[in-house]
Picture 1 (cartoon, one colour):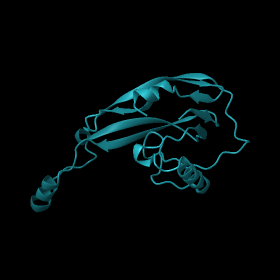
Picture 2 (picture 1 turned 60 degrees about the vertical axis):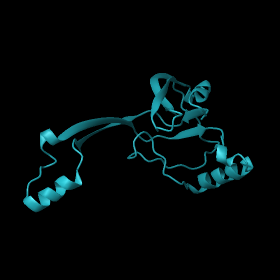
Picture 3 (picture 1 turned 135 degrees about the vertical axis):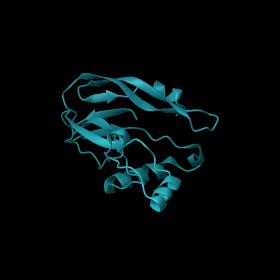
Picture 4 (picture 1 turned 90 degrees about the vertical axis):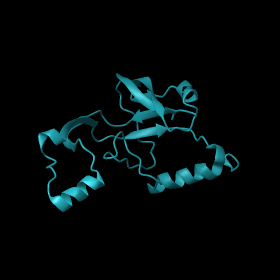
Length: 167
């Protein structure tokens, strides 16, 4: 990803939700079914309230470059470029993208010349770029952040950090 162009004014909304603290264990549930018992998920000791401050009514243009995975490097890059363009035109994807949380799924389509970034500049603070995974195959990774700044509606992603995460 090279940059993100913000097309609509930045607005927020707030969500407060109740989440269950405990994970359900099958053997415990079977015991409750046999012998009775259990607990109510709305009891204060079994729940946690989570607050989310999220962006409302967003629209972006994401500018990126195609980087092929090692297994795909024997195929001509135009194949993947054309596949990407077809999917953008149709709004199709293999996995639905989301913005931060899966509850905030992203819909997409091609941009038009009329789409212009907002005239707004602001320091946004630390922003997650990606996870740098351990090379030992453990699946463990550490987050890589960058200092994000919106300049005239454009957020530029520092390209040198991609080398740090191995992309």
